[in-house]
Every structure is written in structure tokens, then in C-alpha cells.
Image 1 (cartoon, rainbow, N blue to C red):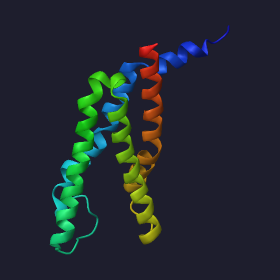
Image 2 (image 1 turned 135 degrees about the horizontal axis):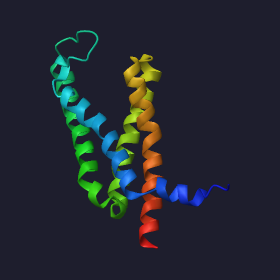
Image 3 (image 1 turned 135 degrees about the vertical axis):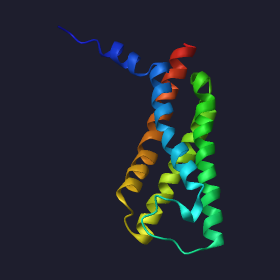
Image 4 (image 1 turned 120 degrees about the vertical axis):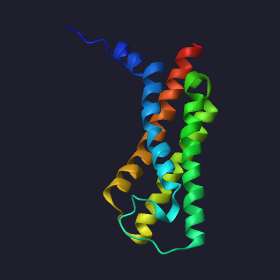
Amino acid sequence: MKTDYSSIFHKMISKKTLQYVIGILALAPLLSGLIGLSGIFNPLFFEELPVNLFLDSNLRFLNAMCIAVALSFYFILPVIEKETFACRIICFAIFMGGIGRLISIYDLGVPAFPLLIFAAFELIFPPLIIYWQKQLASKITS
């Protein structure tokens, strides 16, 4: 019995599957952003942070950006095959966040395990989503 790999590949790059994957992955920045809006009083911090207006303001701003990134993905999901530019911009923003985490690891050391998982997702999934979306867009237009 011979396996038809092209059929498997076409099922893997289906629009619905990509929409589900992005929808699930976008939950991470959405939920962490909502929790992070509490700034230095974030209940997920393992240690108490000093009261610092500058730090608190930046944490809240950056977490609002996480929410915006997640919502941007949800806004383009219905027509993901037509939103190549928007998808690439969103993925680039996420990827750059992963680069920022790598710089932090280099400068300050290895963070708690969940942040390592976020870093891995931010560095691995955006290029895969860009490729997947490109394959879907070319399949739809051909």
C-alpha cells in the first residue's frame, strides 16, 4: 500500500487547520496580555517587584500590545488566505518578541520555565505560520 504524501500535505495546509492552529496559539498572548495588564501586581510573578511607575507603565503597555497582536490574528482569521502582508507583520512582531527574550536570557539569565516555552513558541511558530499561509495563499490563487 502506497502513501499519497501530496494528499497528506494538502490536508495539512488546509485553511481550516491553519485557522484552528492560529486561533489556539493566539490565546497565549491574549490571556497573558490580559493578566499582564495588572502591571507589577501581576499574580503570576514569582517574586514581589518594587513599586516603580516606569516599570509598571511599560509592563502594562507591552501587555496591551500582546492583546493587540492576538486580536490582530483573530481579525484576519476569516480570510487568512488573503492576508499575507498582515500575517507576516503579526508574525514578525511575535518573532521579535522572542528575540527580545533571548537578549534578556543573555543579559540576565534563564527565566522561569513558562517563559522559556513562550520564547520557543515565539521563535518557532511565526516562520512556520508564514510558510503555511504562503502555501495556502498560493494554493487558493492557483
